[in-house]
Image: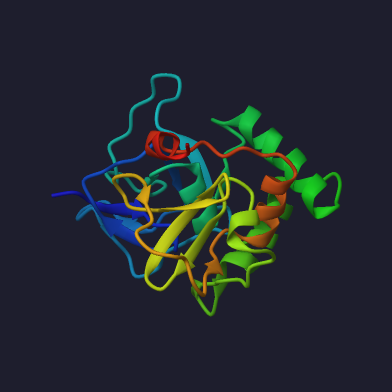
Length: 208
């Protein structure tokens, strides 16, 4: 049975057999004896996205009193949930993200903790996922942005909305109405400034 450690674009943590392209964490939020989540869903404002393979290191997932391994379909999903690239295992990506985040948000010389503080305000509202009004029509959003319409999440790619699932993306079967922004606004501005998210291969199969 899969562990409850797969993250949706809305930030929920569910059990699903599909692992996805990235791992990451929000601190220690599990019991290693039972490999189940605690009541809390974060223990640190540093919500990071990591590579699944790094220097040949191996971890027993949720098997130690260490950070809780979470998994994401792709980087767009992690961004939507409120995570950012890790400055340890993804230093080049993290530095590119910081540069784009600075440019998009009109700031300079920010540290990782500065980004975390902004993201923490943008991703949560009274302990639950914060949704934001769209700053522009869905088709004008930068590639990698994610929105929510009803109970479904959608990736925006080349002006089109693709429906998200833990297994990958598929064509949206209906028009997207009354959508709200899942991606934190400061991250959206980083995308607008040129940061390109790593997307699940299924998105590329549908973009043309």
